Structure formats: structure tokens, C-alpha cells
Amino acid sequence: MSQTVTLREIAHARAGDKGNRSNVSVFAYDPAHYDVIKQQLTAERVKKSFAGVLLGHVERYELPALNGFNFVMDQALEGGVNESLNLDGHGKSWSFMLLGLTVELE
Amino acid sequence: MSQQVLRLGTGAGFSSDRLDPALDLVVRGNLDFIVFECVGERTLAFGHRDRLNDEQAGYNPWLERRLMAVAKECRERGTRIITNMGVANPVAAARVALEVARRLGLHDYRVAVVHGDDVTAALTPDTQLLEGMTIGEVGREYLGANAYLGVDALLPAVESGADLIITGRVADPSLFLAPQMAHFGWRFDDWNALSRGTVTGHLMECAAQITGGYFADPGFKDVEDLAYVGFPIAEVHEDGRAVITKLAQTGGRVDSQTVKEQLLYEVHDPTRYLTPDVTADFTKVRLDDDGPNRVAVHGAEGGARPDQLKVTVAFDGGLLAEAGVSYAGPGAQARGELAARVLDERMRHVHGTNSPVRLDLIGARSLHASALDYGDESKDVRVRAALRASSRAEAQTLLWEVESLLCCGPAGGGGYRGSITPSVLTYSAFLDRDRVQTHVEIFEA
Image (cartoon, rainbow over all chains, first blue to last red; front, side, top):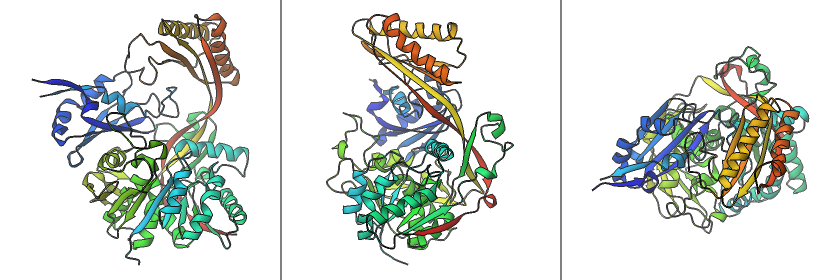
């Protein structure tokens, strides 16, 4: 029977910024969940889930030795810390945007 | 060269970082070097603006207090200080440092200043920016430009034996790589050693972000004694392997989770992390537990450094106006939404404002508002309005309109605050290395 959980329950994440580009790293707590994330948290899904703010290309890099992924998102910070009128111009909270997505566990 | 372990500490990971964990590290850390990393793109731009207003300004505002707290303790323990707190005016910072040394009674105190990052005069209105336009086409006041210097600029300062090394813009990991190169005698083309030293620098550069800061998520990622989070220590070995740790009796945690998160912090393609010194492959990094609050980091590899240096170009950004008013209790979100609609209407049609006005409803939709809807029943919201103003009058108009909601807006609005602050814009460019000439100047008390 499959179970739906938020990504936050199986992974941790951190957000960083450079200009108008954001990166969010996502790491599985349990190596067994690496493939779950690999299959379900695709770059396409991330881009589609947050289309209102992720205006550019989303690239996902895989780091299997660290049980993690790096999502690099262009035009993702409403102009970046310089220009954005968002209180969080750095997108420090973008990690928790991703962690709110759900995944299916077998 | 020494075969011993080199002990590096981080005394600050950003411009406004805490001081007490830095002093604790100096007193109890048995460090060879402590690095205060205090420059971001925005702090640099503000430094240029401060220097334009006052030629003795433009360095880190906490420089004097930081040095007053640690300089004597460092001198007594043989710990040398490396810092980019010079920001846009390293020479003025060096003069402050000498004055601090005099007040603390430190004799023969030597300060090495690294020159050459300020390339303001080397750029012209025709200089192309990576964002697609030229400097002239930005259409705003050009404040200054700085190249990211690397270890080639820093090494002579480290080798001078100075008590304190002050720089402006240097790539953050290079602040940590330079003492490793000096200590172990790594060559400038030993790309694997430089990659490992760069990984250590990258992990250390944000201070508490590897010891439990920017990490806690109660119930999921708990951090002990976060109020007293310790700053990190790197114990570096000759082959570039390093153990990341922190002092006993400090808060926080160092484990594979904190290290992994920081390894990819502000990283794009992890197979090609670019600095002025090397192109490092972070996917080769391996982490081993080495006891409580100790993680061994090794395995990074890399290739040749980039041919060009990255440059940050700073412009005046005009005035940022922000103002808010709060609503709570039943219907709070609906009243807040109404207030936001009233504001939008009046800014556009009564005042004819063309600049975009951002309207948040803190407590319901703010940080993630562009992407997500978190529901419509919050009972405690704050309307926040923000505007990058074309004039001071326009900025004042926004504050006036928000405050007027107290009497003219929805029921029960309170807690008005407003502020107008100067802002900056930064863009990027590349410069050939031969257009950036660096040298070291020694100042002595």
C-alpha cells in the first residue's frame, strides 16, 4: 500500500542564491529514499509546481554519493536580492517551498 | 614546510555575524588562523556608496569592535587574522586596525593590505555586463566595480607574516585556501590539492551554517543550544583532507547533514565549482564520521582555474519604501485583502504611480505568494507594501497611504510602521586577468 508524505519527512534541503538564480539542495535522510526522490522530484515537476515564481530553466544535478540533488533554477527570485520586492529577496525560504511537495512511498 | 595539522577557524560568515563565538574560538580553539568573511555583493555596493560620501568610510562597520575584542587574544596565542572587512576601502580599514593595536598596547603590529580588486576605473560605460546590457545602458549611477581576487593575490600577504591581513573583494574560499597553500607549500597548479582546500574554504566561509545554523527544523532537524551555536574549526592535513568540527561546550551540531547542506550552498553545477584559483568537482567529495561533532572531508578533485576574473559592478538602486499595517481576529484576512486593494487603487489612480507596488499579506501570502496559495483564513495578517521609488516624494507617498489606512481603511487596523532606505543594484562582468594588477602593502604600528 502506498503512502503519501511530504518531502520534508524524508529529506532535508537548503537554499542559496546568486543574482536571480536560486539553488536548492535536497538530501534523502535514508539512502533507500534516494530513488524515490530521483523518480518523483524531477526538474519538470519542480518547475511546474512553482510556475508562478520559477520563470526560467530548472536543472537537476544528481549526487548519488551524498544521497542528494541540486536544483538550479534560473529567473527564480523575482529579480534577485537586488531588485525583488519580496521580503525574502534571497529566496532563503525556497527550500521549504520544495519540502512542501508530496511523494508517494511504496 | 610544516607537517603539522593546520587549524583554521571562522570568526564571521557574513557582514553582521556574531562576535562572541569568534572570541570563544580564539581563546579556546588553538588556531593558526581565524578568518572573518564579511563581504557580499550588496555589502560591497554599500561600501562604495559610503566611500563616495566619506573617503575614510567604506569598510565593515563592525571592524573596530571585532578587532578590539580579538586582536590582543590573537597576538598572545599566535593566531593570525585574515579578513575581507576592508570591503571598498581596505586602507582606511588598516588605519583603524593600527589605531586599535595602539589602544590595546600591541607593539610592532603589522597589517598587510591586499590591493587590486577595485577595478572601478578599468570599466567604462561601454563595458558589457553578463546580464546583457552595458554599464551605460543600466541608466543608474555607477558606484564601483571589484574583481574577485584569488590566492595569487593573497599569498604574499600571508607569507609576509603580518598579524592581520585585510582585503576587499576576494573569492570567499580563497581566504581559507591561501593559508593552506602557504602552510603546506601546495603549488599553484596542484589542482586536486587546491580543490580540497577550496572545498574546506567553501564549507567554512559561512561560519555557523556548517555547525547548526540555517539548519534547525524542530521535530525534523533539531539543534541543541542554538542560542550558543559555535563557529567552525577545520583541521587541515597536508593532502588537503580536513576535519570540520567545533569547540566543546558550544551549541549546534556538525555531522554529515550539516556538512552536505553547506557543501552545495550557493553551488550551481557541482562538477564545476569555479573560483579564481581552480575548477573544483564537488561530486567527488566524500564525508566520514570522525566522532561526535567531527566530519572528515576528502576526495575533491579539480582542474585548471578560469582564464578570466568575475567582477561585481555596483549601481545606486534608488530608494526602497516599505510600510505595513496589521489586522487580527475574525475576518482578519478579508480585512487585510481589502486594505491591499484600497492601497493598490489609490497608488495607481489617485497618485498615478507607475512603479510596481508589491502587496503582501504576511500570515497568509507573502514569501511564496507568487507560487502558492496557503489558504484564506488566517486570523493574524500584516499588509506589507513595498516600492522601489523613482523619487523620495513617491516613497513618502507610499508610507502616507499605508498610514492613512488607520482611519480610512478596513476595521481594526493597527501597528503602522514605515521606512525608506537607500538600495543598490549589482551586476556582473568578466575581466581578463592581465587587466587586474595586485600587490600587498604593509602597515606597521
